[in-house]
Length: 165
Image (tube, rainbow, N blue to C red; front, top):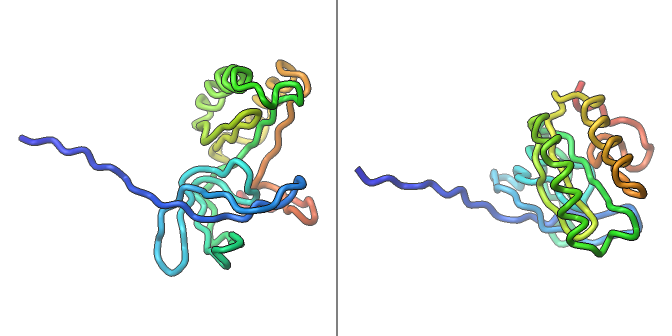
């Protein structure tokens, strides 16, 4: 009997990058669902307010504006290396190798990395204390590093979005 491997194909969608002094668009792996809706397959490295598993509707593809149609139940976390290590690919790999196994224990994954930056997707069911514990320990281990949730707080008001309740 011939065995066939099914390969999942996906597209990329332009998502606006705003805040932190950065603007533009990021190409994010996504699956087109129709009616302008897209399922985000990996949490973006730079874009805020969404995570893997979310369904979004593109408002303007050219500039990447979007609205979240539904949440996929995942938290996205960015981890930035210290200023001294931002351009060091070995440091990025080393840090990712230390943090990723702990994230995997919570059911999460490393969704992307570039020099000095990693983005993780973690199920919200893991609990905020467990997530925060991992990244607090990482900050202790890698002085000068910083981390942030990217889809938990409103970018304008700073208030929790509370989509997990």
